[in-house]
Amino acid sequence: MWTRWRISIRVFVNDNPIHYFDPDGQELQVGGVVNLSIKDLISLIPGKYRSELVVQDGKVQFKNYNSLPDEVKKYKGVALLQTMISSEKRYKYAVSEIAEGKNRVTGQPQAHKLAVEKEALEPRDANPQNAIRNLSKTERTDLPTGHEGNDLPEEGFDGAVFIRAGTFNRPHQASDDLIMDYPRNNVVYHELFENASRTEGDGGKGRDYQDAHNRAGANGNQFSKEVNGTRDLNSGSANGFDPQK
Image (spheres, rainbow, N blue to C red):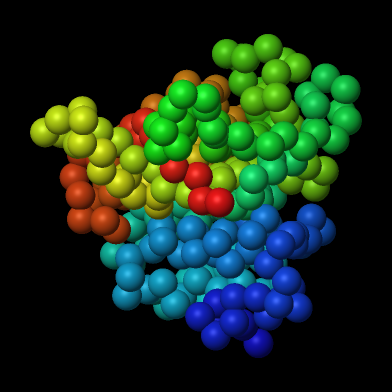
């Protein structure tokens, strides 16, 4: 029987949202603070259909994908999630302060804190890239092989995205002195699309980082229009972050 997240988003982890994943399971799994991870994934789907995404034993699925209207299947967020769910690759998404992976050179487990605070800066001005870690088996050629941003995912996964809990922002169009919230689901969509593209795009070979990043941005504009009702909002253009304590 499927477990709907709106009934109990923690039922499959014995009401413990701190850390859960099953690397021997299917293709898209949640970890970190599980209830927040599920909330982020559900936010990629237009509101009327969000109850169609369910989680069983830590694995993300659509309750009945084939019964969804064809126009809904074409929504960017729905299509991305289904691609990752039905893939032969294994993915993990986690809202967490810790990004876990393996050093690409040594193969040793790595755990890096997603530290976003900077001295002499307001918390909201912290670099949002420090709140995100995007790991794929496809190496980033723009970074040294041993760089922490080039870590491999944990054992059993081909791609993994970690995003710290908090609020993204950007300057208001009217003035750089005014700050406006930036939709978190735009960031989640961008990072997951980029990860999937790096991991299995280009016929399964995996795309290089810049190509995957550009494709995520281009598709993110349509995603934002479909789910948030905003146009021309590039999903990779947040430039501030306020961490949730």
